[in-house]
Amino acid sequence: MTEASGMRLDNVSRSFQGRGAAVQALDHVSLDCPAGSFTALIGPSGCGKSTMLRIALGLDAPDGGPDAGTVSVTGLLPSQAARAGITGVAFQDAALMPWRSVEDNIALPLDVLGIPRRDKAEKISGLIRLVGLAGFEKSLPGELSGGMRQRVAIARSLVTDPKVLFLDEPFGALDQILRRQMNIELQRIWMESRATTLLVTHGIDEAVFLADRVVVMQSRPGRIGRIIDIPLARPRRPDIFTSAEFHHLEDDIAGALDGH
Image (tube, rainbow, N blue to C red; front, top):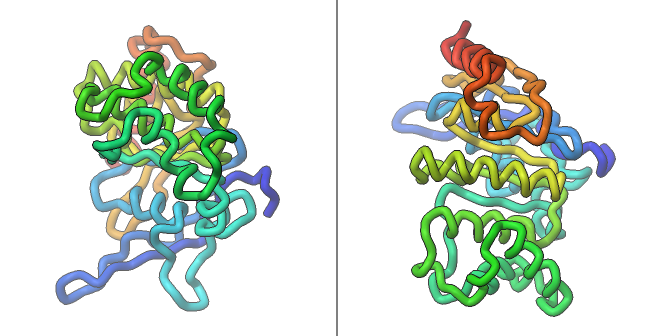
């Protein structure tokens, strides 16, 4: 597998021991995310979306045995890619360090990887401008709104120039108006970075607006039900949310979620 191949899960299964019986979170799932693509995972709670993302991040692993399945991120094991700074991640909880300023929170991955901050000073400044937080460099998380904290988390996920970006419901805790604003901001940021992106979401409109394709998951056991291409031209403007084509795609995904 070459670096240009982005991220791939091949025949991955994962089970967890529940009370009295094993729960099959993923059942022989394969997914290829080409370099520079934006893929959204959507499905009911418990369908294995976040498990897939955690395995791709190296925070979890497929089941053992001869049919364990494999994961590759730009040709590396997930743990190798993480140590090399090839992957970036933002979760629903911004998880900012309350005692660190905006710029210090963004620089955290550099500190963890032992990369001298002075080598990335221009990158940090550029990210602060990119996410619209110029003037808030020295602000602490407690002085920021929820949307601003998520912007810091997105900037932090990009500070190592990751080739692959993982987003686990990064706007799930925001109200609908702010969430839509952040969707528009994320599209702009992604179009500049062009990182291979895998987004976990419960929002059909969010998936359609952001992704090149939407992977609809089914639960018990977790499997891919359908993959729906999103042929909307970029950049996608806010008025696209009211278009007939957008609503048709939403209906198609809703039908797939219902098993149609």
